[in-house]
Amino acid sequence: MKSSTPACFAAVCATVALTGCVVAPVGVEPAYGGPVYAAPPGVLYVAPTYVMPAPGYAWRFHARYGWGWHHPNHGWHRGWR
View 1 (cartoon, helix red, strand yellow):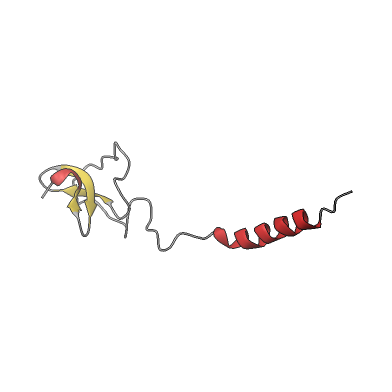
View 2 (view 1 turned 90 degrees about the vertical axis):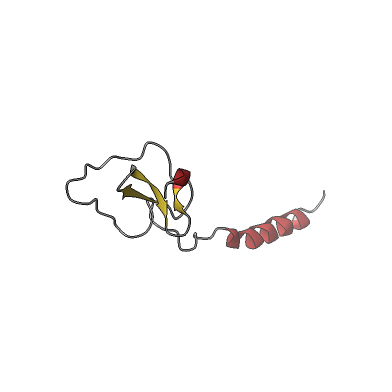
């Protein structure tokens, strides 16, 4: 009868090697980005109709175009200025 020692040894090595693969995400912002944002007085809040385009975007109010996704470095999503 064959010995199962090499198979057990391989399973133990794989388990030990893969235990460090689960890591926490590094510095991910909240779902709608950065600090809490309050709409200006008298502005009706409108919820997003599609998902956040990329990490770092926040749902903000634009004085001319209304509500949209804004990124601190990339500006407004879909080209608003």
